Image 1: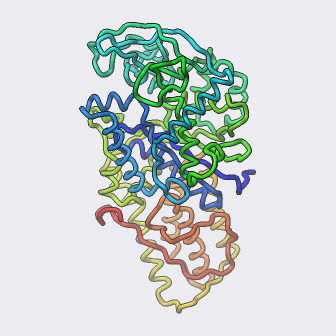
Image 2 (image 1 turned 45 degrees about the horizontal axis):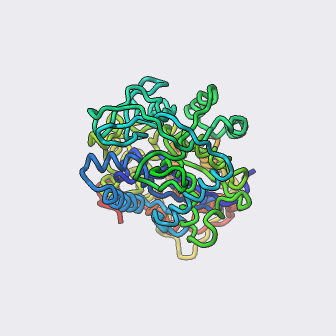
Image 3 (image 1 turned 90 degrees about the vertical axis):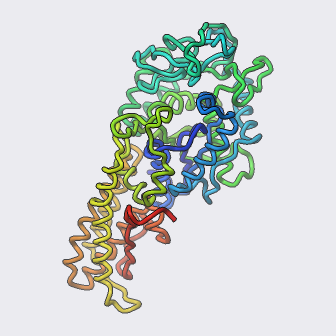
Length: 524
């Protein structure tokens, strides 16, 4: 049984500040995490939803190079755009919507302290190994700076991890490496001495953890975890030669930075602290003694990072921090049958869609069609058709019918409910709760449940022939609004959902708000 008073920390994967969020991002971790956070709040759980921009990623370097912008200019512009998109989609970052945490000195100190504690405790090893080196540019290549062929599935891949199969390819493992920024720049394999984190040391603890949490892993990412455990676990870089990112705090790694993927855990700890008000010790919200429930939302291509590397980073602190309860992993959301691509301009920016379509409709449609267990597809005309015919039209017909049904009731009317009506309301609540349980979390099924109830209640209005029947209808309408509230921001504004409240034997007439239409204009 889940402790209803236990605080929940929800972290969608830190967005890279090399551009705004497109619709594929929203349909993946960012909107899903917000809807789940709203659901938990509707059950009375204390929740903080937080993340921060991932400014240190190599993709900032490659994007700035492609766009002809200074890196910091791109970061500042992208951070502002991401923050505005969060606001436009109605995601509440922090308990009082504090927005995106700043990447400041406190952030960098948190990262450096996190890794220094591990280095001083002997958790890292110093290794001399080979990395690809671009001879004309005079720089070592890692992650997005290098592209080639994945050694596990032989698909095209960047360095670090393969987006397709999810397997890592650090150091000199990528086949046929070439510089992403200049494919004609000759590549050499040069020796460099860095710190690494040996994941193999944690095999026994990882195996036990995954066995305990197997029920909350979706099939595809769980398969990847099994594949990784079937062979030797990789070493992961802790520092890499470079100038863009958080400087390595180690005196014996001059000219190196903290490997960007190592930042995710201290970044999330910092973001949680900042979103809760930036008071007290930075570590407190993540300490084992504080006992928060940690839940990550991220894409399949981040399973190796967020599901393995980051887990080991917490384990390596030997009980200091709580471990995550779940990784909610999504697949890719395609656009017109092809993967979203910023470099090819094959995308729909989230901000543009939210400016054109009322956000409640965007939120509901992306939840309904999101890539939970397999790749799904976004098409604007399909979205308009499905949203109008399956959601807006029946919902608003229901709203009009309810308005007629209560039009002649005197002020102060209180209607009785029956056990049969309360039973139906309980059944719907339990059905929605099942959709939100971590072991089979599906926003799509929850959205389908809402649609089914809209259709049922629209038909039921015409059968109301007594005060008891009208009271039952009001109770079920209130239940419908509570179950729909995690998806909506504006339509259910002012309604305080409580999915665990005792169902009343008497109820006042319910205001059932209409939904906006796609043609009705922009968001407030």
